[in-house]
Length: 209
Length: 326
Image (cartoon, rainbow over all chains, first blue to last red; front, top):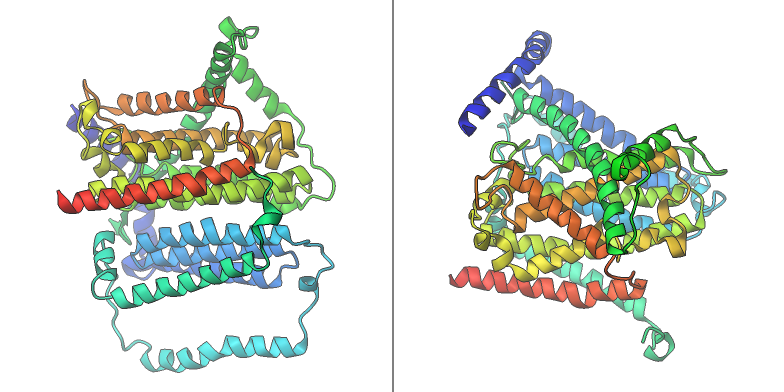
């Protein structure tokens, strides 16, 4: 009986999808091959990343700047989806939006964020120059490579790697970098605990018992 | 007809499913408001709503009409853009959250391979929305509520993930449909019996993650008037309200899928079992709201960091060892 229901629903869905299919066929004549959707998604994600980044830099309000950052993370997650790695995309959202941005928000809220603060002033000429330098440095490395290899390298369509295989890889052939990264995180955590508890004595804090 | 891995057909499926989920959210909110008010009346030995309609059944619909017709009141000096973004941001991600939930053997939007991670990833947006609401409404109660929401949400997310991870270890898959398939039809073959600690931790954290009593500190009425949504009226408040009930529904469905055998039941498998189990969990949430008093904030964080987190890590470790041996 479930088979019958499923085939009926499949037929209904096919019927509903038919105008969209017609639209897609009509569009595919004007766009390069079957890849038009990928190009469209790529353009959308690039716009998300760039506008988010600009919002993060140009905003005079720290919370709005953080929202720009969230938008950029969303765009990057979309790029991961486009590269057929949904696990990385979801992890990007889980860690960067769900944890890091929320903690940044917490830190901002603990400070007094008035409009006359230091962050609302225009940067000096010197820091602008260094910013430009930092922007151009990767471009100087990547630019010639892009020009040299443009149109010569064929890249295959990315295949989705099941997350089980990903985990097995992290714990076998890539175990050293994986463990080194966790040591770096441990060092950062120890530093945070040290900074937070510097000058702490148990006598002064005890009102919870 | 493949577009980067997703066929046009599944795109249509997603759109249809989103519309159905919106309908489910609204109906669920209406039903649960009535059930909650009648249930709390029953527990506290008072009648609950009884004036509007037979046994007060139309009360929730009248409340909804009132909220729709109310004036949108915006206090002075709010961050206008963020103030209106927050309720929308609370409401929208819920649509994505229901995509991997297997309501029935066929009634699943998409059998996403990493369904658990998808749910956890988009659940983070709800917290962000609460924060933005508290910050943007230019109100000290709002900011205090938002601050509490962060420390509570970030803290309780960790044991929740670890509890779900124990079941994922056991099944060997993050696909919610496969997790249901790995459980049997008979109640003693559901996961809550072989993962009792994970089940207990999940039940505690689901109450905390949905900001419900006894862990409703971000909006504790007696201390913060209404916490992060103090300054919202009319539809702004209604959207937060809808999102809260939808989140309750979601954690109940996840609980039914992971621990209570999903759509499998003693007689005749099907989507009705998922709904029966999910609404049993919903009733559990309402029940403990009127059973336990609200905890203090330091108690709330101590329960999490000193008890639930070590317990969930221990449970994960035991699960891993048992799987390795068996």
